[in-house]
Image (cartoon, rainbow, N blue to C red; front, side):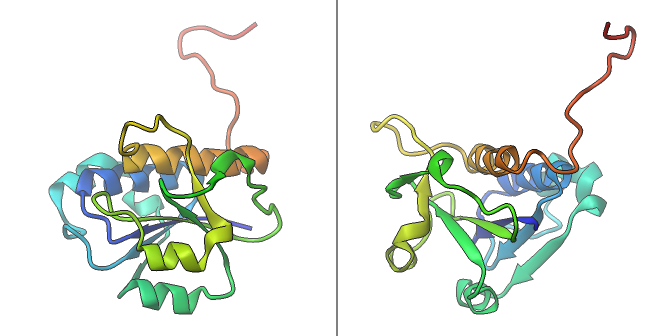
Length: 167
């Protein structure tokens, strides 16, 4: 089983950089669907996750149709402010790969895609008067909910002090 983070047409390099860092520290695989609003060599993108690029497992796709064709049998959860199900109410299968898909920062995921997958459209609760959370924050919230349900596999759960020892 593996956690997969899917960004559909990301536009802001700092968000993608932050998300790549989240993927690196959690072991999640990153999937990037073209077109992007930046180039992978963008300085702002690398600044957010520069020392983690060699730790990433990244796959790129020509289009949303390309991604959907290649993953038609996979379990995909579509994160959207339009979703009817809370992300924390979903039971993410701990025995198979899970894909969490997020849309463009300025437009989200296409409504035709959401309508076709209504049962796996989820939202992170927020106040109704505001548009949405930042994309990189949303990815972190979603990823850690899945990992929490899975018992944080292969992640360190305790840290150590540098000048002192815990008793």
